[in-house]
Length: 151
Image (cartoon, rainbow, N blue to C red):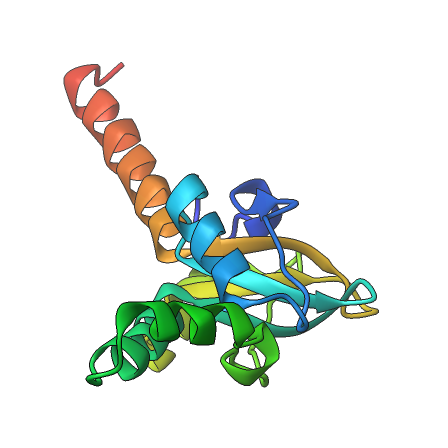
């Protein structure tokens, strides 16, 4: 794999999504069940935000760190909607952007995920730093094979 490889080759297609009106309890279930750390937020098919595991944890800390009883805290979690927690202005990539471009954006902004959208801002995938680590791993494996078999 090369730095000029389009991210469409390594992105996750059709990632799990939520709507702005979904609750943070819905988000919690996805994080726990699927193990994801970033969930795109769609409104009528268009990307309108991103909710991260960090966003979720900040909400949990603000709710559960106070002295209220647990039942009341859980009601707040059920009542809080994604729109109130999500990052609204999300930097996105297109399918034609390269692995190198994604890497530079991650590095410059300390992001951990970037949604991939088409020209109409419809979500087509997501790329994460984990995806880039898998690319790097494959590059190292290719180089090791060349060293082991110089022919």
